[in-house]
Image 1 (cartoon, helix red, strand yellow):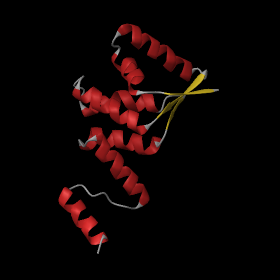
Image 2 (tube, one colour):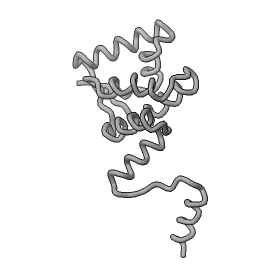
Image 3 (cartoon, rainbow, N blue to C red):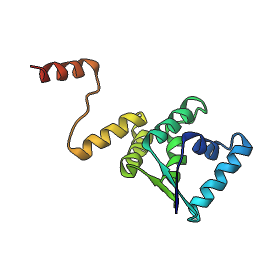
Length: 132
């Protein structure tokens, strides 16, 4: 089976229906994945870009973004790297009103039993203490 890496433009055309001709092509590609003709590979960085564009350009709320992306990233024929972390991050983004990237990093850290440094002062302190 053919693996195709998908960029944000394909997902955005599919989700927004704009422009119609490219949206139709994206829709056909997703259908091919769902029918097993191809596997669409997806990176978390692409998901982050889609979240950003839907939020900043299309003015989707975080809840709306999660509602359209969650079914897509778990659809038949879609193979998303870090699926568990991305789905948890999308859910937290919608439910806890946090940025996707922050939720994604927090989930990775949680799964590794680690924490994240959020504030520049904190990061400077950590770096300074490591160099002593």
